[in-house]
Each structure stands twice: as structure tokens, then as C-alpha cells.
Image (cartoon, rainbow, N blue to C red; front, side):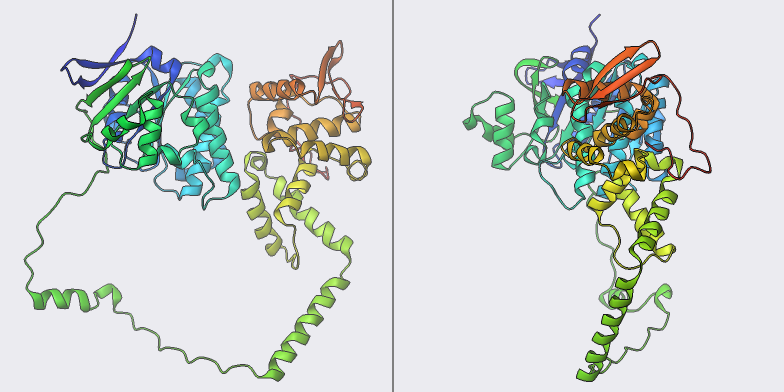
Length: 501
């Protein structure tokens, strides 16, 4: 049975329908400038399809939380959860087939990207038994899949872009159907936009966006001017779930309203000029606290004072240089081990762990030059892999770290975990240990990463009577047999290196 969603009316006054089952297989891209009616369109889609398919809404402005009252969506306040918690929540969302709205309104842009990436990652990494169809709507998609680096950290951008790429490129087999909306096609990563087969293009004014919209719809460039003339709520539809030819559609009415929207014009209050002057110039009650007297600028230091200050700094630097390097290394190792003793540390991003590391160093009185971010990454990989000091100093481990440097960040820890086991001829890590090395609890993801490494020729896996063995050809070493289904053994209190790999 074909399920058709009524999106509105066409220019011929006929219903503009959307084939929901086809949409779930082919994904959707909505584009239009601010005020073109994108959010209204998404709300219509969500309301009309709510009875038929599970939904998850990535909502950066908190506009869609009103779906909860009418359609029973569970609103998740992202600011009240850590990234690791959101990943687990997403897994439970798929297990129990609950429609949700992820409200990101209380976070800044970088944290919105990190939390959305964690939640999408949890949806993507769900076990195969829970790959039920789900419509994943992402508003303001250019925030989460930017075409170029911005003011956010490179790690946050990569995590968010990777999650959006997984949703649009690899989500179909896992039952995830992405429906993304953006104000600017030029600001949206091309590899994310290119995966959509259905399009609803609204009003836009910039030449570069009109040209891309025309290209996606298979229209000639001279026809791109039509996008300037579209009224609010009017879109041009194309795709297997909508129409085989570009089709103008006027989006229909919705049952719920967003919390946002443009402010309405309101007459100014009739305040006499003298009263208005007093209102804005006279401090209110909350402003009555006396202002501190302006401080006088201190006198400029003399040449003798500057020379004495320079001598004091040189003396401090010399004293710091005389400190035993072994003591500093031991202090940094102690801080790292304390940081990783938290069970949730395995599921936090490197940037978050690094900031925590700097704070702990100050708290423990470890001053002077600390590890920079690249050195912290290397040290973190060594500790997560559970590498002993004698192994870390060997030639084989140096070769392993060189090979890992060419791999994506989320796979480096997995490779180093396998390398450590092979070099030390330890039992092959279980799927649970491999999953934790990449910051996940999904054994399915662990198996997929191992398959990826094997496809690239970096490992070779075989099964023996006593368990799984993984060989690393580049190192000329292989692990001892190990049980892939074994649970992780928690680190004991007397272990010097926590089992966080």
C-alpha cells in the first residue's frame, strides 16, 4: 500500500502529494531564504507523516517542541545532557521507537554541532535489530554540515559533518531517511546535498544559490530567476517521491505553531517626550548601586623596574629548566591517568578531554609548559591502547603510530588497540573493547570498523578453535586468540594504566 502525504496544492489546484515510502528510500533537501516558509514546510511534513513513521527532529531554534502537545513527541533538552548521554538516549529512541525533538536552543553553535553529532551517531550506530524506518528532519542543516571551516573548532566541524554525511549517504540501509533544510545551498556541504533525490526549492535571491537550485532541479540557468519571484510558502518540487518534472506547490496549513516567527508590528506607546526622556536616562532600581570611582592609571614603569622584572623572569625560567624532566613527565602521566579513570572519558571528544586536562593540571599545581593538543592526542592514544612503557619505546610501536596517523581520527584508537595486542602478543580485543576505543558502545559499529580496516589491508582476521586472531601485516605481528563476544574487564584499582581502549 502506497502512503501519500498531502503537502498542499499545485498550480492546477490539484493535491501536491509526497510518497512517504519513496521518501524514506531517497531523502529530501529543502532550500529557501529566511522567511520563505521552510519551517512551515517541515512542520507540514512532520504533522502529515506522524501517524505513519517514527520521527527525530534536530531543532537548533526550539521551533518544533510544540509537536509534543499534539503528536506526542518527546522533547530532549540537549543542554541538560552530555554528548555520551545523548548517544545512549538516541540508542534507546531507536529501540523503543519513540518520536523525539532534540532541542538545541540552549547551546552555542559549537556545542550544538557536538551534541547533534553525538545524537545522530547514536541513531546511526543502533543494533541491526532496531533498524526500523525513521524520518530524521534537520533544520538549518548548513550549521551541521558547513561547506567551509568557520569559527568553531575543526574537531566539532568534522564530527558534525561526519554525522550528517552518514545520515545522508549511509543512513538508508539503517532505516534513517534524512530530510534537511537550509537557507543557503552555497553554505551546505556538497557531498551532503548531493545525496538527496527529492527537492523542494523556495524563494532565494543570491545568484549562486539560484544557480545551484536550478542545477539540482535540472533546469536551465536562465530559468533560475524564477526563484526570486516565489511567494512565501511556495516551492518547486522534484524527485521520485514528489514529481518527475519540476512542479510548483503551495504548502498547506499546519495544526501546530512554532515558538518563533517574525515579530508583528505593534503601535508605539503614547509616551510624552519628557516622560520618555526620564525613562531612558534615569537609572532603574536595579541600577542604583553606586559606580566605583575610576581608577587612576598607574605610573609607567621605569627602565630599572623593567630590567629587574626581566631578571626575575629569567631566574624563574632557569629554575623551571633545572626541574627534573622525569618528575614533570610523572606529574603529567598522573593527571592523564586521573582524567581517564572516569568511565565516561572514553566517550568524550578529544577537545573536551584536553580542556579537562588543562584544568586538572592547574588544580594539581603542574605549571610551566604543558602538552599541546597534538602531543596530548598521541599520549591519549597510547594510554587508551593500554601500551606499556617498554612497548611504547619500541620500533614496532613507532611504526604503528605512523600507520595510524594516516587513518581517520575515530579509527586511529582502534588500530592502536589492535597494534598493542599484536606487539605484546596479548589476546585479541573483544568487540566491546574495540567499540570503546572509538567512543561507542555499539558492537555492530566495532565489527564494521574492523571490516573497514580489513578492506584497506591494514589487518587480517581469522577464527581459530580458541578464538579470533587479528594480524597486522605492516607490523609483522598478530594477536593471540581472543573471544570477540567477551565483555570488557573493568580496570582494577591497582592497575597503572586504565582499561579505556
